[in-house]
Image (tube, rainbow, N blue to C red; front, side, top):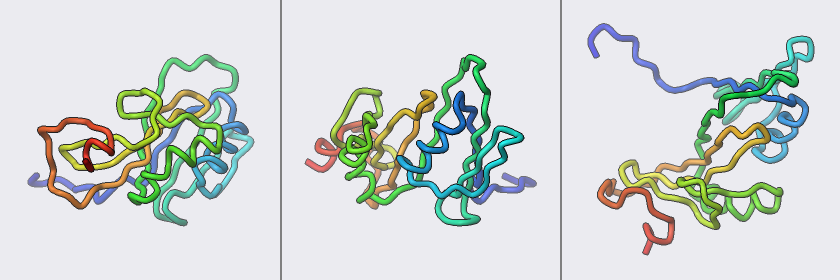
Length: 152
């Protein structure tokens, strides 16, 4: 686009949470993000994604206020991480989900990209995703299929 300043990537995103301590534990212990900074006076916590200075997630407490919005966040992952995510999430007490929101034991594949992904919900209901781009030719005609359907 002429005259634009093109973004090279996404550096940070922020989510509102109903219980900051619970969410810090979830993103640290289940998602595996290193905690970068907590700001108790502001009800905020920040995590590094992909290493220090590579990307950031901010969590902001809403206290006991009702939340009327569920957001989506995708984490870049390796194919090995994605294919092993369902089993690993279950050991952590988290239900792995397909692209369609149903419980699953394998990744979904988004044919037009193509990418493999496993989804889950955080304690506040935000939809999280582990996604790995596949080094294969896109097949948009297949739509969204399970890993076994894609590979078979």
